[in-house]
Length: 489
Image 1 (tube, rainbow, N blue to C red):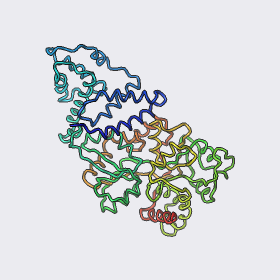
Image 2 (cartoon, rainbow, N blue to C red):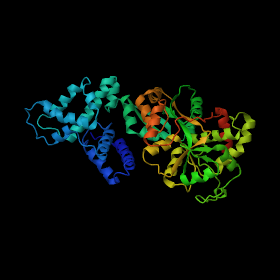
Image 3 (cartoon, rainbow, N blue to C red):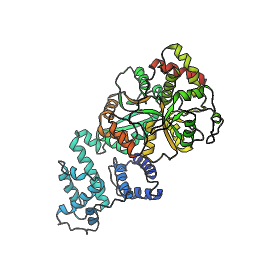
Image 4 (cartoon, rainbow, N blue to C red):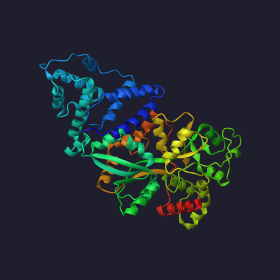
């Protein structure tokens, strides 16, 4: 029966794009694609495909990083075909070398009960010939994955980790900024070890709150207020908050220098963006050409931070919460009188932008590709910048700043059935998933993990984001948003 490889093809396309970017300064794109192609050939004909992209990435990275083949593997590549009477242990040496090639730490795993028995079985499964190293790699990769899963899981989970149909599919509506996390093959692998296969539909978080979630196991918006809207609509109370990310503003060095002179940006290891000074300029409809000494960006349009559409996206709602706090004399907005007092300015911040994307992935994607021309200031999640820096997508002229004050966007899982509840617990409690979340730029309970990622990729982030304000109550935030939406019309 043909092997279904649609998901594998998608994963390999993402892997290729990622490695081409990661090795941009070391290898040309065709060299990277060649390494991936060579690694993939090693698994031709392998029936179990669940972890093939992960294994291909490991092999390709070893080759691109210039690591030599293990000595045992090189020796056995030249070993003549044995006759059928040779001891099976000799043949097992090739598979053992393959294990070391794919899983460098497999030596410790070889003592796992059952693995000592399975390796000789693999070695003697074809007694008349020595398995070529490619076939050995494919066979032993499957054996190791299956045995490691058996050693630490219930039988149903072991079968799931081995790629069988026992995996429970969990479908969810997810904030677009988390799509790359769920598309990471390592995340899929870890979830599969616990018997889950996650399928996501990326969307703006406020859009998710208005969706018909029938048939979904979970919703994963980007803040507590957005989650609260879903909780109320479905009359449930359970929620999980596996990670968070403060709101940030991405810009470019020439813009940062102009705004530093204007008193909006304050330089430092992690530059800050003074919201009070920004609102002062916005209140006066200040244009870029009005700024003294501005020769870097002499454009006749108002100084505005580009956000997503507040009608569909959580990040815009979070920016509204920050601006409302500052406009309300540094106090959380409460009551109809305060709402009406701040609404004219808040509406101007959004309606003056023109077209806005429905999700933060769109605005950040434009920032990465279009330069400072269309949008010199872009509201993002800190995690997006950190992740892009780790992927080699941030150029030297791109600058990350932090609004003062800012809002911590707490990404919240709302489980809609038992499978969604299981996923929420895993994302919050599983150490490997928490580590991978930090690699994607999110701040988890393990603060050291995020700090290590930021330090490794030299991202200038504060160890702690201190100047954080609370969002208004659910009802007040909705009233403010409705006021802005009315202004659009």
